[in-house]
Image 1 (cartoon, rainbow, N blue to C red):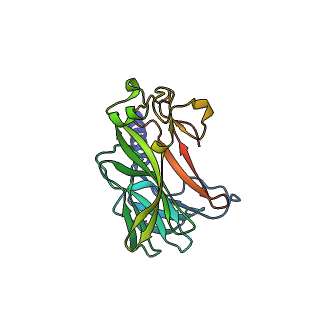
Image 2: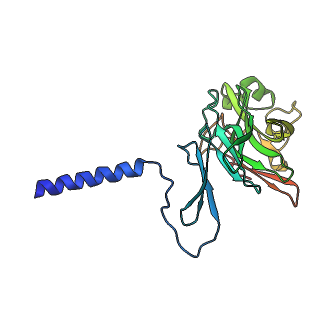
Image 3: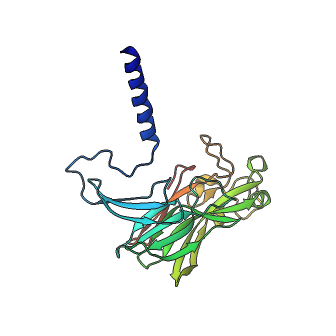
Length: 249
């Protein structure tokens, strides 16, 4: 009896661990009376995007060739706007994207735009705009020499430094073009080199980005900004971004 009981416990334990390890699109918890509506999500380990009810019923799913680039939006016409991980070998960030796709309600790919090469890569977030265009967070590579030329301290500078930019993409046909962009690199301040045009007292320039700030919690000298979300306020015509390593918006 003791041997049988021990075997049963082992089987149950192994089965439980296996179930926890398996990806699931099932409902784990639901409390009736909470906010009505639907949930759109793209599991990290899947190339599918799901729309489910709050009760866990699958309403719709879309299939891409790529795992998520961290963002997905259901548009007013029922189409899906989604960023995908293009597999950029130059950027190893877990937030990598690189390609933006649009699928109609029936799952047909109707549009895509690639932002992925050796010097830049879309990552984390995108945002549909009221005018039909799309905002995207894009990482840029800067060399050690480029960083030092804008006042970065040599002792805080590796072989490369990641900067960030926000681009606005206008869809045109099956592709698109960038019609506007904002670059962190154009809005820097530093107290290191008075000969540079971006020299100034950091505390007096909240509108600028401190090029020599390194978050002591992360110690990341390369991905020192790590912007991971973007949003748009149509009433104020303003864009807001969040910098994870700066703990700022």
